[in-house]
Length: 135
Image 1 (tube, rainbow, N blue to C red):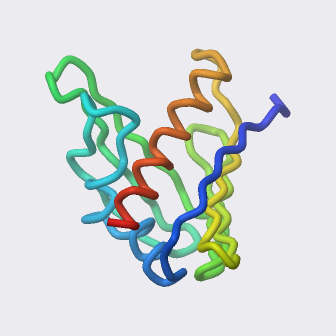
Image 2 (image 1 turned 45 degrees about the vertical axis):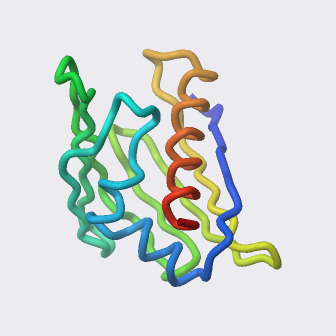
């Protein structure tokens, strides 16, 4: 599948703070949810090429949960993180601008859920990230 989905936001914070919040397991557990009835209960980050990242996402009522796990393929500090997960690719760009840092995620969609649902879910998580960093 060649159609890719892109979501982005501008975070009004220094690049070092944005990068740190994106890659810190403690921070990830604070922002990594698409809605208030979900949360991330565990997170690990081995931020190096070949390193693994993983987040355990669960419904707060305990009805469902899954592990989101990937492998880093390229890292340029404060600029870009590329990885693969579930046979798909993900590129996260950190672009310093006048108004803050644009965080842009581009990923290959999966085939189970509609494209728009995937875009909305990833955008919701990114919006939570923005709120978390700007607090």
